Length: 266
Image (tube, rainbow, N blue to C red; front, side, top):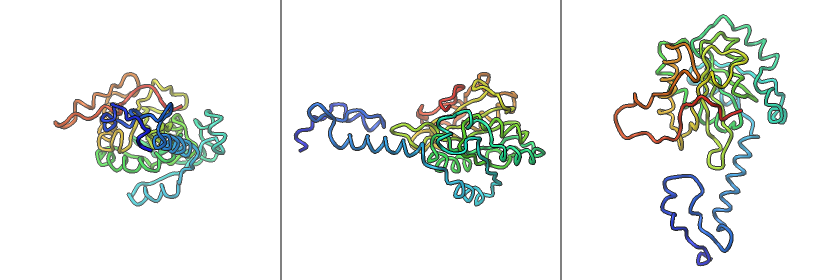
């Protein structure tokens, strides 16, 4: 059967990318193996959107690392409402808002929020290792409880940060899954968070996963942005990511993830 498959001369380039190139050809179609792989990736991307976040397991992992945690829910009561009504995912449920209001006297320097977003896989797999990589670099910071948020959009972090009187909120959230990355985590930083902040007021680090922007490099970028956000009193278009200039000498890091001022996540 392999005699009927025309090999692509670009095949050697596949070692450098996860993009679907040099798949070969069988008649007027692609060979069976890459077609089945495409269908599998498509199914994984769909599963990532609909799979629920295992909050119990996430809390257990965080407690094992001595993090204090809180559990909140957006105003979207379920996944169907979350997908059809993005606005509901950007504000807290009444119960969660009331619970956070009772903790407003903490006033931490930074609050980390782990949100399911459009990929609970990403939040479950990438958020805790990233926290392990960055928190040791924040010894002089008052770190608030880690908030685990279900049915969350990026802007939900603004209301959480405002209620906790946090100087900076960092939202760790599952990004919209692609056909080669169903578990990519996005990081969003907002200084002086409050309801109504725009995307121009926050910075983003995207594609956080072992196959993309790995944990040490993502933690380096996050620490850089946090440090300069606190010094300058701002995030967003006024805060540029020059963290690559402060990397230790060595081979250049691949340009596979970067801080930005626009949001790839709704």
